[in-house]
Structure formats: C-alpha cells, structure tokens
Picture 1 (cartoon, one colour):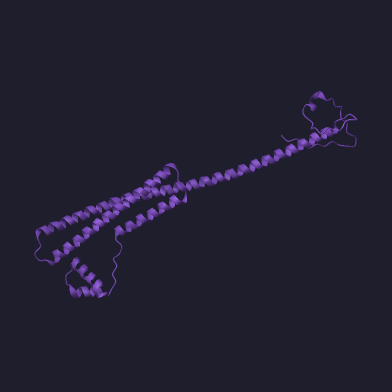
Picture 2 (cartoon, rainbow, N blue to C red):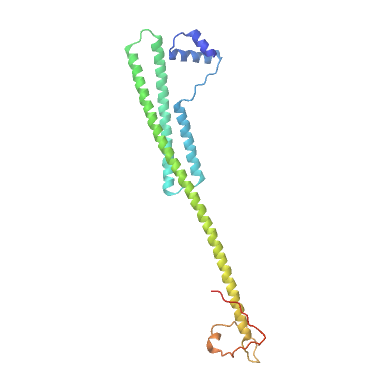
Length: 245
C-alpha cells in the first residue's frame, strides 16, 4: 500500500531494520495506513492458557469435586498459573531481546565501521533468543500435559453425573415398592379385622349380658371359650375372603 511505496522512496536497501523503521515512521507520522502486526505464536499460546483457565474455573463452579479430584484440580490450576507467569516473563524477556536485536541490526546495517564488540553482542543476543525459544517450547509441552489432565477430569465428572442419575432412579423405584408393600399390609390388616368382627358376631353370649366391645383375642380362640359348632343355614354360603401370605 502507501507505506510500501513510501518505504521504497525513503530506502532502497532490503534491510529488515530499515524497512521496519521507515514503516513505523509512515504509520506514526504520515497517518496514511494503520498497520497491525498479526498475533505471534507466543500471543496465541497466552490466549490458549487463558481458555484453559476459564475451563478450569467452569469445572470448579459446575460441580463441587471431592477428595483426590479436588486436589488435582487445585494443582492443575496452580500449574497453569505458573505456566502463565513463566510464559509472560519469557515473552517479556524475548521482546526485550528482539528489540535489542532489531536495534543492533539497524546499527550494523547503517553504520560502515562496526566494532567487533557489536558483532559479538549480536551473536550473544541470537543465542539468548534461541534459548528463550526452547524454554517456550518446554512450557508448551507442560501446558499440553495439563490440558490432557483437564480433559480426564471432565470425563470423570461426566461419569459421576451418570452414576448419580442411576442412583436417583433406583431410589424412586425402591420408594414405589415400599409404598406398594405398605398398602398391601394395610389391606391385609383390614381384612383380618373384618374376619375377627365376624367371628365375634357369631360367638354365643349369655342372654342378660351386654355385648362386649373388647376385640377377640388369641386367648378366646385357644380353648378357654368352648364354642358350639356353627351350622350355617342350608340355603346360605359362608364366603370369607382368602388370606394372603
């Protein structure tokens, strides 16, 4: 665009430092084009760390973990935070080194009489940059391992939810069976009381005695009270409901 044409007018060399400096002058002074650098791999890694921290927070808020899982979640969050701090410090150092390297290259490209000390400084800065890049790679590997651990915790949490649903379903079925059994017991109790009332009604009483309101007990039926045999009418049937076991 306009900045490229402006750069060609100002500088005919192909030095990165020259092109970068003149482009910045074009952007800041001429105001002809807004130039935004694309996100670097390190910035993308910081964004990835932020997403993992958000997933850990959501996992902690969704279901309260207990015991070993809670401890592992706290350790994962602490390790991710340490990776973030280490990555920020590494990126800060790398930005400083890159700035120094850019400035040094600019001096080397534009000065005709460079000293040997400047050349050694460039070499040291390049080696330092390589070491920092290796450190960034190691931090990326640690972050991948933490991400796998988060996925494992999410899988275990899903299994716990399914087990909880199954347990709730079994509890509902058990409560329904207990209710049904209580109804059966109540029904049998009513039938037994009805049979006892019928037996009491058929028992002979003295002519002058009042009807006893006391319920018939096992003692009355065990032989202390001799009852004559009951003969039902010839045209009547005694139908008692069968007793359930």
